[in-house]
Amino acid sequence: NAGVTQTPKFQVLKTGQSMTLQCAQDMNHEYMSWYRQDPGMGLRLIHYSVGAGITDQGEVPNGYNVSRSTTEDFPLRLLSAAPSQTSVYFCASSRRGSYNEQFFGPGTRLTVL
Amino acid sequence: AQSVTQPDIHITVSEGASLELRCNYSYGATPYLFWYVQSPGQGLQLLLKYFSGDTLVQGIKGFEAEFKRSQSSFNLRKPSVHWSDAAEYFCAVGPLNYGGSQGNLIFGKGTKLSVKP
Figure 1 (tube, rainbow over the protein chains, first blue to last red):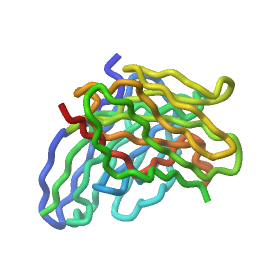
Figure 2: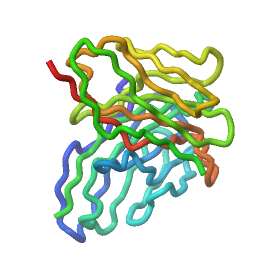
Figure 3: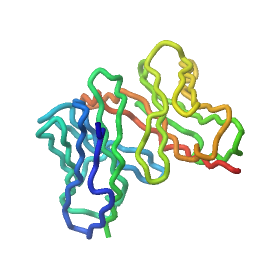
Figure 4: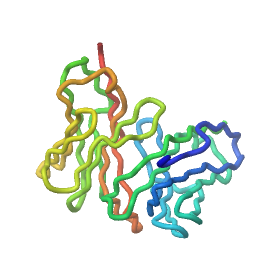
């Protein structure tokens, strides 16, 4: 099993550009989540999904969109990048009934100029 | 409100010394508790978890943690630190109860561990 994979590993954008961060898992987990990590802030939940076709907002959803058309994939879209979105983004997945034990991808480091 | 507090932002210990990283939580019921470790430039790896039962849990890499309900704490310990333990450590609690977010965790802000030779 590859676990949770994320692409790209690094990305530089200009203000106003859009892009999609990819996340995939091969563990057949129902739950998937996106977090951003900023220095001194820990991990903050952006969006999450409890199954294909079902998504909801987390703590810091503004400026981001998600969709979940399959169990495996959970892309995060930045519609119009802003410097405040410079961060490290982590995707995570967990299995229903597993007491919320989350498995994390390696992260995407995004810089918005 | 649910929250996790890691009071120490940065700790430095000597190699071979013992380690205790503090974690306090605010939660309305019996929580699920986790410690994750993040090495520089890497993702988060689960060290250990507590769901129920024995309040002293063992994890990987020689770490252990003790759940103390009366103190709302879940401190991480290691008897002898190795240079390779230098990393950032995150305490987390779940499930997160808002908007039906049953699959998510609340994370503390992390404690960075430096190890002196």
